[in-house]
Image (cartoon, rainbow, N blue to C red; front, side, top):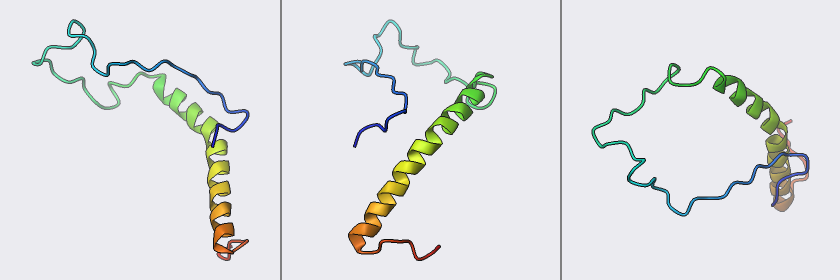
Length: 82
């Protein structure tokens, strides 16, 4: 199954190595970055909300189609719970 038409897709090259080179790795004694709202950028929440809004329709359409196919396979053409 491919990406539905109208959904923007960004293609990036995957790195062969998942570990950064030794020169860019933080020292083993470094403290992990603080987690929580203070660590998140102020603009990140707005971007996340916008992404969720853009993905809601395509994902819900795919879920409905998958549920419909499952009902057809089971021999039930409509959902009796409604």
